[in-house]
Image (cartoon, rainbow, N blue to C red; front, side, top):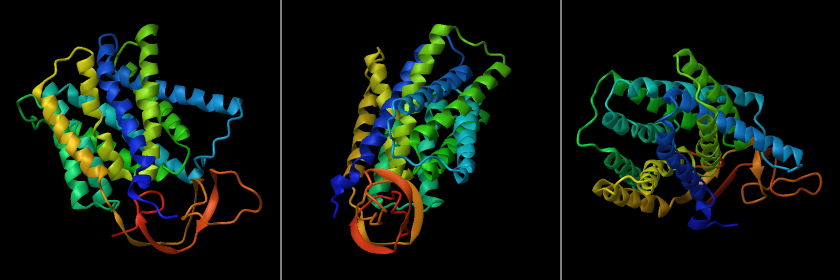
Length: 352
């Protein structure tokens, strides 16, 4: 079955954009909650709400007998799970909170754009994901759009606060790339585990710093926001990684600040020229990515792994009996050479 470019973009691109949409909504809505919740405690409640909400989803789909053909996390995934909780759920938020307390808000906003650069840079330079000139220009346009959006008339101050925020962005860049290692497993379980442990860790850190636990109303609202903006967003992000790889998923996810800014306008913030500039730059970057054409003859080495799949051009194995699709089980891939449009998904992580 030969695939064209539009079919390769599905469902990865919509999943990545959906993740950016939900996460982008977190910023303007979280600002409304900061009036009654300390920042460290809010981070904990957002993650804990994500973990508890996804745990409820997991229990509900088990109770009603909903069969989900996803591979569960295995023991060899535990080190990666620990790493993404530590880097993405604990160190990242902690360094951000420490940095924001030592640097102006304008500098902090600009420095946060380093997460996108860290994510894509690690994917390209460390994990050797393919990148061509068109993809690089698209990513650059999106990042410049995010910088234009957060520009307050002065550059970032290179002080201890800026270094801490840069450290937080590096942690999230590592987190995003390591999460790719888990993208073949059930994304609901992965996001649930991260949310529960990161949420508990941040709340414990907030209480240790002397922050008061908020009243029930704001806490429940924060948990609900966290379920959608952190939990569901992370599920979509993991699925995006499965289909697009880290660099491209990270690039689409970089649209989140622009989505948040648009929502803030709807909530009463002024419509500014920098929003228009950001829209033009991000629109250019999005167009460059959506029109990317990556096709060449490539070789699939023999591998064995477990993930949700259907019997397509990359899955031509036999079953002992009838098998419903999609399904998940341990299976082997024989060496294969062919040519078609593709992204660096689970089956196209070859060198160039």
